[in-house]
Image (tube, rainbow, N blue to C red; front, side, top):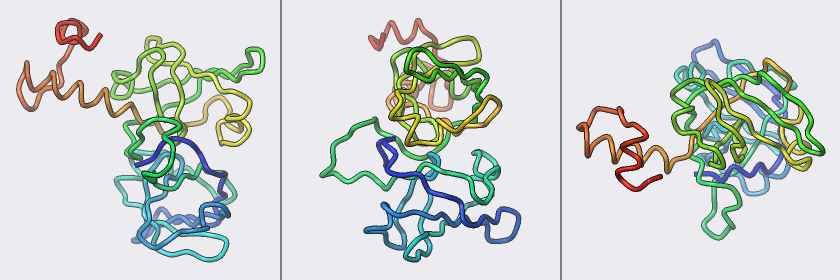
Length: 216
């Protein structure tokens, strides 16, 4: 479990995605201070398990399914990645609850400045957009952000200079892909209403259903 507050930018040292044992090695500093084998690390929003580490890097394994459902397969040596250690119960929850389980991959279709803020419009698949609401939370490449506007097929977020400066989003350009994870609370609301009204295996809920059950 994570908060979506990036601790540092790591650098891809090595990546193997086509062999029998896909893995990624990442150069880092801060998160290595208390790292252990078996720890969960969020790498661009994807929860991965540490299998080995050195004084300046760590290595994680990745499954073929993870490579298919995220943007990790597009990483190259030298690319920057957002890193966050798993949430500690003694820490403040500065972002929102993030699982590191990606719902879909989006793409930047607009990027522009508005005063001191960087605004991104992100094209997103329907399986992600159904959890996106204005002023709600979303994790983008592991970064906890607030949704500004929801459109047909896309949504926008606004980055303060601090976020743009210490995460990969400040480096992204139009056309770049992003790992997206919807708010966990929305998923439980969907499941609750779906089971109550339509049965265990249906996800067919509407705005009317949300209104009738007091969620909006």
